[in-house]
Length: 183
Image (cartoon, rainbow, N blue to C red):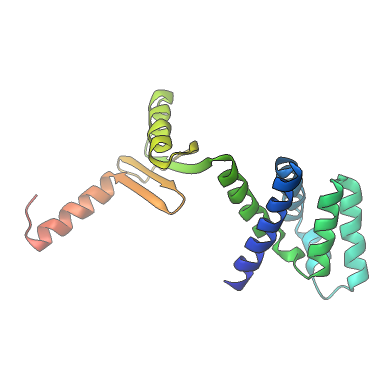
């Protein structure tokens, strides 16, 4: 829990810098690129984060990554600060929080929709529109299929889950019958 709070703070700090200098989207792309590279290359992550390696060697590896990717001066300084403070291991989590905060800043909400079958583009557009009205934000909808669904859809937007699956409706019906409420 403490690590999440730390990552959140560092992400928020970078976003505030980005807001201030108008480079929030640039920082998003750079952070995404660097975080993605480190996530894809487990050995690279170990070379930067593992305390079994001496600090000067780890810093040289980080500096080589920075030199290779050539990010903005602010991002270079930010990465070196993360390293100096022993927070470079939180890079992935910081990136996730940064994306959430940057989306909030732009008025964007990301949602996931899961259905048993492929939905038409019209249906997806209607659902996206309804979610946009409900949240008051532009919604980016990721559509997935799950063959284990009997039918219906489940939509997750942030902490809100809208479950319209047949399975859940049947479970609710069973609970109602158990309680003697009748359906």
